[in-house]
Image (cartoon, rainbow, N blue to C red):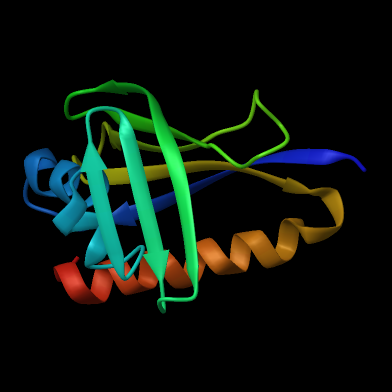
Length: 128
């Protein structure tokens, strides 16, 4: 089974990178759009959805106001991760959220659609 790395960019109308950083890196921020419950302690994050699914991830990298990278602990692919990265458009000065993830090659479209839904949820709840 072949795996594909996907990279998506979402332009967000957010007044500051601090606000965007909070919604992608804190438990309360991630609970507002990514998972129903999030608990982050040290470098471990626990995500829960609909009280049916729980997944644990390790924070394997971050730079304040720049990016945060997670690795699912139950993944059989130890070199894969998902990452949220904040960049700023040079011309418009608007912030861009870059999402990097990995999936099976036959699931690329579905995974991209899932991220579109998640980011639309982020836009709605955070007013972006």
